[in-house]
Image (cartoon, rainbow, N blue to C red; front, side, top):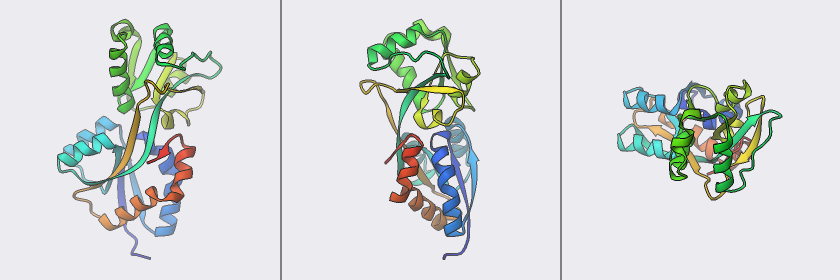
Length: 228
């Protein structure tokens, strides 16, 4: 076994559930200790571009590519693919979202809608623009930061929530309506980036190998994502 090393990982919520289940096994088998920093995608970009140094960054592949261009990330390793889903409060009627047109009708009919500031929220804002309904729904849409959108719906503060499936699944008090229909679905790749100034690059690479190994795939699937 290589010498035990401390690894620092900064990540957003999309890969959280898979990461939390896989991490104890890695720590036990490798002897390395991992310190985790949770932040929203927006906070991560600001902090990392502002000079904060960690060993591994887990974020959308597009955001990591941006960080790579800025010289923050040295290498990118794809972990999982995730689609956007819709949820309602437990026991509430589930709208029909079997097609893009049905989704449009459901959004127009909803009294209040929440989506995140992360990749799914950015995509939905653009989707509603393309559907031609952004102005109509403007007053009933709210972006949520710092908690899952499903939690807002569970409290009864909004009627429907959109977010990555992996971020909605663990939220109590909601029912998953389903993934967005294929004609309007957006698949986001989440990846691990090795920081250009990582203090423990070898140990960090070992963790990345562990997260991308075939043995991690069942856990990733169970948490609402597909291995990349």
